[in-house]
Amino acid sequence: MRVNGTVAKGFEPVAEAFAANFARLGERGAAVAVYRDGHRVVDLWAGTRDVDGSAPWERGTAQIVRSATKGVAAAALLLLHQRGLLDLDAPVGAYWPEFKAAGKERTLVRDLLAHRAGVPVL
Image: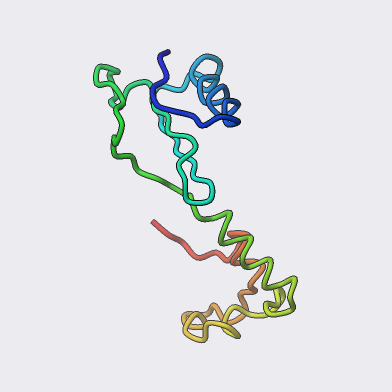
């Protein structure tokens, strides 16, 4: 698989890991960009962008990003907990009064964060 793009000196392992996704893990199409101190140090793309594999991935190919912020959100909430500003055993309604509606007044913050609150979503 031909990997396109650039990698700054010292970031070659990122390019190697990116290529390994195709060679060993069966990736079909992907891109990655990494910025450090406001400078782009990794800008790579490879593979195809469509189901049948006929359209090549190009610089700027649009892609849906899912679940990209869950880790950052969790880290922020846990930092608040560490600083004593968020009680994981408190009801969610203590921080978000409107959440108490429809019988959810006993749902704890920890249950909401662990996807155990029983709140359905489509």
